[in-house]
Length: 591
Image 1 (tube, one colour):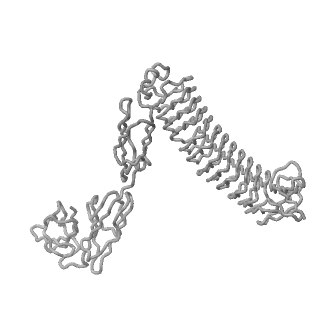
Image 2 (cartoon, helix red, strand yellow):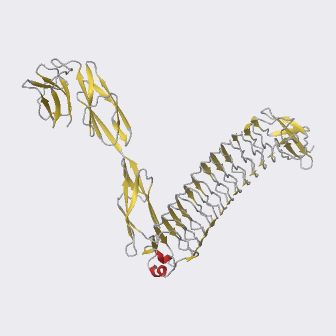
Image 3 (cartoon, one colour):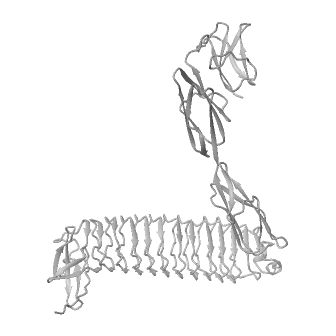
């Protein structure tokens, strides 16, 4: 007996606003307890799970709430059909949903399927899904994260728009396009991973993602839509892939970028592409760029350095308008680019214009270019940086010239750190480099390791816990433990401490190599009284003990063992001073 294999799609249609009544062929109870409704299509042998009827408020049908588990199949007329589709507007406005589990049979999430599910915090996208349609999760304002599997090839426009609580988004390697406004307004998004098959990133795709700090554009991306990252105000770092041909208008406008390197594959920089990036300090434009459009870098008020590739032929109206901090412009082309209405309006005329060797005359004869201070230099870029400015900085102490291609860079460690090596493996500091191509060099530093050396005046009296090797800035805790019949008197610490410290345990911040001596004493010493009530003054000076007010009385000095000590070149320690019949005094000597 032949069996007919029927392939169907189950379209889940809950909580949707409609203009006429929606009929359904049956209902089932989901594994999580909610009732879902469906229609069976005889022509396509598919099932669509649908909203039960038209009414804005679901007057006769309860909205699904809480955690919803979608079944992987539904039995209709005695035949089991797999659930393959979450239909258009299926759960739209179901604000009571908190989590959704989709089965591995689902291949399509329809438009508006979960839009405005404001209580939804988690949902799994199974590996079987191939497409997420327009507005699918729009305004899911409590959705925390999304992981899009590699099987998905398409994400529709506004699919995750205004998911304002979304912190993390991972887009799989199968996705080829990200639609317009897909993640617009995801204001909490901080972690974004883009798959390596993406070709197109749509207009406003990530605009107003105001918590996003960095992004890497994969090499396969060839189209970056206008305003793609506009108003990503926390975005400080972007890595542009080698496939992008043009940076469209407003792509990175009003972001927090601090530096930009435009690869050689880019041929044009669109209007206002980086305008009002007020934290931008450095721009390097690759050799493939032909045209810099109008207002491209307008009002980048922190921009100090601009490098233009050898292929730049045209710079249009006010491209660098009001970039008032530019001090250096590096030109890699010997022929001055053609300028439209003053692209450098508001740029100081005191800025240095670095031109290739033997190109001075060409720039001196070119209008606007000749307003700058023209300096001939090798047409190569030297990028000398620190791996982390918290650890140290790098200075270029000698720049190459047309007559001398040598550059000298110096690594300067911050307090608590030391230079270890350069990215080319050299440990020379300063380092001399012969510049015959674009060169990047990075200085690496390490935190200082410091020693806290412990000693004891007499190890038979007690011991110390602590000491050893510490990183700069670490806290060292030292504990003195006296043996029976003895007691702890104090610490002497060198360098940095002038007096004996009695704290026990002792906590110190390690900022240099230190030696700490723990002093113990016997519990009682014949002839020595620890209580001093008279006006005799006792103090140490230059390794000796000075007694004032003794008036000819005998002075005896004892160490902490009770032994009589001669008052000459005394070592660091605690001593007891007895003057006549007066009470004893404790005095510290630090050499």
